[in-house]
Image (tube, rainbow, N blue to C red; front, side, top):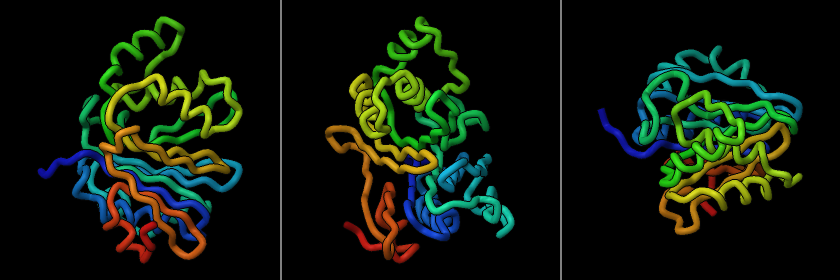
Length: 211
């Protein structure tokens, strides 16, 4: 089995966000073949579908995408660099915290993950997965910043490593990568919709323009 470093994809402001995300993940399949998932947002709530296996196995029929409503979406193909290959580690990870719903898809490694996790557990955090991605969610939930992009920046200021990620709320999409840009993340546009992907081959699949 080919293994690389996970694939992330996101779209903001598209009528067929789930379908575009499916195609984007299909194009990024070579980056991770253990599990995949799609989360969509419709301004009020999330809709999700995740599972073990390849993109065309998890989403094997049009009905699998029909319930994923919304104009924004994020998706993930997983190759486990931290944590076991299991359903509980399938991404995007979703939490419901004091400010609402939040989903995160992440590619990379946090080199200070064990120390950060230990500190969070001392302060009462309970981890559900064995993925370092979850540490970012706990740091986000503890932030006092009201704007989600500022909260993410604060959280990422406490971790070290090579990473790229896309974060979704019912109304916002935020993309980020490590300061050195070690993990790839490309920005593009498809008509009036913004798209983000680990590689531009995903843009080719959906007819998006690289920016």
